[in-house]
Length: 378
Image (cartoon, rainbow, N blue to C red):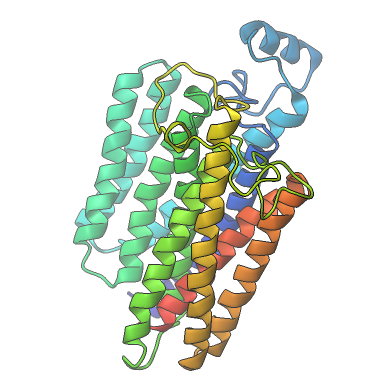
């Protein structure tokens, strides 16, 4: 690959990573402002490319979807989120095309995946859901296998892999609406957004040459990888908490932290709280679990936070002592900010700005670990 192409790839990966971070933040804003079902159809909004804005269009929307009255202050958020996601999809497609350039088989797989994805959306809008799902599966499989077989360094493979991930992420966005905010889908959608950001960020770091000159940090690499796994599990727990509307299950204000409902051992139902699949047709907006199940989810999230805090706190010290002081400090600062935001969410009753920032700092904490991981590799 020519130096010019590599330079384009480097800057495009960086821009896509920053864009993906912004999309994670905006997606959290949409979810936390209860706008996830404000457009009851997909990918249109009440049958329109944008959203109803005039009185006649609003009346038509209310008549077409009587069970979901139009709310202008929410609908624009959901549809803008879809536009931003589509823009990121185009950026990732460009990355995959450049990364696979002059590799005929990989390039055909990338183009084929994009075409199948577009055809799948068209068939879905026509009501051909079976064929649409089949094409979507092909659209995911083609770049996935192409990334595995691509004979280029890891950063190039990641660019192609990101295309498969973002196509699957689009399907999760569709299922979020059509399955009425099913918690396992909402949680998966959050993880998919974080995975897209992580892949693009790591590719940008590798293209920028963030790496060690030798193998003296090889033993630290495994410890950082464990930290990434623990953090991803905690993000999943956070997504499950949010999807089941359990963020305030322990109350808010005095007595809500570190206690739950003013007690150290409140009534809990962990079995009911972690049922992943409850069938199709249930509207999960507002949550369907009782207080004991939600309290169990909230307590599990807190216990996970304690484990992650202890491990990443130790890891930040270990990293700094191994000579990577900037990485260690970045991990510590992001970790401290995330813990303070989590406590503030509970204590102040889940303010929208604080809750949105809690998602954003989780992504930043993940980025600090990825940067450290890249720094330990040659």
